[in-house]
Structures are given as structure tokens and as C-alpha cells.
Amino acid sequence: MLNKPTPLPSELSSAHDLITAQGHEIHNQSILIEKLKAQLSGMQRHRFGQSSEKLNQIEMSLENTEIEAQSASSEPNVKPAEDTKDKPKRKALPEHLERIDDVVPIAVSCCRECGGHLRPLSESITEELDYVPSRFVVKRIVRPKLSCRTCETIHQAPMPPRPIERGRPSAGLIAHVLISKYCDHLPLYRQSQIYAREEIDLSRSTLAGWVAQSAQLLEPLADAIGKHVMEGSAIFADDTTIPCQAPGKGKTKTARIWIYVRDERGFGGQSAPAAYYKYSPTRDSAQPSRHLAGFNGFMHADGYAGYNAAIADNDITLVACMAHVRRKFFDIYKASKSPLAQEAIARITALYEIEKEIKGRPPDARAAERQERAKPLLEEFETWLTQVLQTVSGKTPFASAVRYALRRMEGLQVYLADGRLEIDNNTAERAMRPIALGRKNYMFVGSDAGGKSAAILYTLIETAKLNGVNPQEWLTNVLNRIPEHKINRVAELAPWNHNPPTKA
Image (cartoon, rainbow, N blue to C red):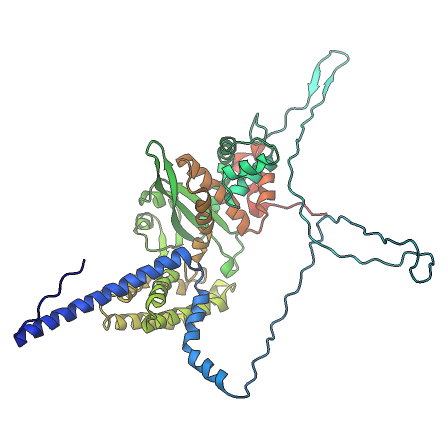
């Protein structure tokens, strides 16, 4: 509520004091407005904007050349540049797909011109892609019984192993349910409705039981993938929220999904990439400490203080994330078009350009290139941030972004000396996208046990995707084999060991 204006003082000295006080108030209000604009811009972009910042980076650079473009377009006799972009070419349909011929016969039996007899010459073939809806089949396991004519002993083959003993679903159906939920983000109640259209009665509770039993069966394989992740020299770590139903309270609680990724493809490493998800009901520091027990190496992560205990208890070197630093300046630029924020983004972009050039090179070559080209740029960036901080108000969002960057400068410099490291933690953030998509659809997990099952299945499916393996095909194969597979050799079933069948 606005206050009524106070009468102006009659004395000159009092008027000067009032003007000075109002000037300070206006300055503080301007800072508050800038801070609120930056917060509003960040929240709007997070909720409604694009997840990628690349397009906005282009828009920012276009603003600097807008006047030149307008003046160039106003010059007489200037021909527009020809569009040399290649037209899109239609790809051939995959050869492994079944071909069904639909022959269109000629409606005449003789030549329309002379009435002569027609004989085959050639044919024109036009291919179109069709879809045959998936269908349920009943798989019958037939075990003949044989009896001995001498002693009348009855012989019969034992029942083959099944993912769910005394259950009706086959490995293929279970895999389809799991992939539909944790890969295609289709809640179980929607799957139940889809199956009902085929007159198949599979309730949501039945499907939930299958998910829980399958996760329990597959947990040793998820742990083997987690062991593979923790054996890496460098990992990427992050966490995100996931709502969990709180029994008896009529609402959900905020639980966490943690992600640890091993991905050495950036420097040409030969180890298979893998993603290891863990669930916890809280975000206290005991959770990452338990997950990271025994890990020694580099860890890319954000500024969450909960990692400090794990870092202190193990030989872990924290690698800070440049993307988090850039994002703060990006939000400020989007809100206020600040030239200082624009320059900060440009300096960070120069570091990313170097990373694009050296991606996939051996570690030694990457480290040498960073020492020669990136290290001076990062040192100049730190000096520039220190100088700029002395010229701006400490209460502004820009000053807050500068202090955030300077506090993490030691961790940001770690990647320069080791070619196995990356400039940011985007690998872990990409692995979090399935969680974000899933919680929008199924909204919450039903219990802590359900959260644990989700983490196990995300581990398997996302690791398969990282290795370029069809998760439906691989998971069906695993569910068929794992009931009788030796527990100490379960790593043999990992996605990177999968040999897909040859397509006819």
C-alpha cells in the first residue's frame, strides 16, 4: 500500500536532506527491480522457455549487428544472397522391414489403341510406410509327458525359468511395460487403458506389482552398472527432486533422485558409458556419502555443500561447472540486456569454442591445447570479474553472479590440466531429463520402495540408451536370462555386452 506524500520542507537544508534520502531510496528500489526482473526472467525461462541457450546466444549476437543489417538492406541494387542450403532428401525406408505387396491390376485385358494382346513389360514400385498395431498373443509352454513302458515312470522337462514365477507375463510383455513407463514416460494407469482397448484386463495394481518384482530381480545388474561407474577416473554427479506419496498425510513429500554418470567418449576413452541412479527420501549429506564411498577420482558437480562430506572422506577432487556460471549471466542478460553480462557470456563462449575443437582428441592433446589457449582466457576472465565487481553495486544480481563465479574459480580451473575432464557438468544434467519428463506424467512415486524401483530401472534403460542399444530388445533378453544367471557374473548381461540378433 502506497503512503501519502509528505509536505516539502521550507528550509533549504532540510530539502537537501530529503532529496538525498529519496535518491538513496530510488537507488535501492532500482536494485530491487533489477533483482526481481532477473528472478522473473529465470523462472519464466525455466518454466516456459527453451531448455537450450544456443538460440538465445545467436539472438544476442544478432542484436549487435542489427543496424549494419538494416543499412545494408537499404542500399540500392543489392541482390539478396541466394539460398544455397541443400534441399532435404528423403531417406530410403529400412531394408529390414517386411515388404507387403499390394498389386494394382490393369482394368483392361487388351490394348486400348489396337486391341492387341498385352504382355508383361515391367512394373513401377512406390513404397509407403504403414503401421500394423501391436497385438497380444498367448504364448503356450507345452511340456510333453513320456512314460516308460517297462516301469511306467513319467518323464517331463522342467518348467523353464520365468521372470515372475507363477505369473502370466512373459519377458517381452514385462519389458514393454517397463520401457513404456521409464523410457516413454507412460503412466501405468494409461497403459491399463490402452490394453483395455484390446479387451485385455490388466489393472494398474497388477502392472505395479510386475514393476516391483522386476526391479527386485534386476537390482544386482543395476548394482553392477553402478560399480562400473564408480571405477571410472572421473564421474558426473547431480540430483533432482521427485515427489513421493506420503501415506496418511494426503499429500506428497519431496524425495531425491541422484545421478552418477561415467562417460569417457569426450576424450576417446574405450570404457562403456553408464548412468547410475539412486533414490533417497531426503537430501542430507549422508546420501552422497553413502553413494560415493570408496570412489577416488574427479567429480563434476554443482555447488551443493552436501558433497563436502563425501569429498573429505574419499580422495575426490571437485570439478566445478562452467554451465552454471554462464546460466546466471545469461538470466541477467535476458532480463536487462546488461552489456557486462553480455561480455561475461562472450568470454565464456570463447572457452566453449575451444572445447568444440578438441572434443574426441586424446587426453594429452586436450590438456596441452587447454594450457596454451584456454588457461590465459580463464585467467583474464577471473581478473575481469574481480575488477568489475569493484565498479558495480554489491546488491545487484550481476554482482551476485560475479561472486558465484569467483567462489568457484578454483574448481573451474581443474579441467585445464587433465584432458579426461570436461568444462561443465552437462553430462549429468542430460541424464536428468528422463526424470523431469517422467514426473510430469506420472507426477509422483507411490512409496520409497517405488522410488528405489524407479532408480533401478532408470539405471538400466538410460545405460542402454547411452550405449546405443535398443532397450526393449535388450531388456527382454535380460529378463529371459537373469533368473538362472550366476549372481557373480551378472555384469555379463550389461548393455555394452549385448549382441543384438541379426535382422533378416
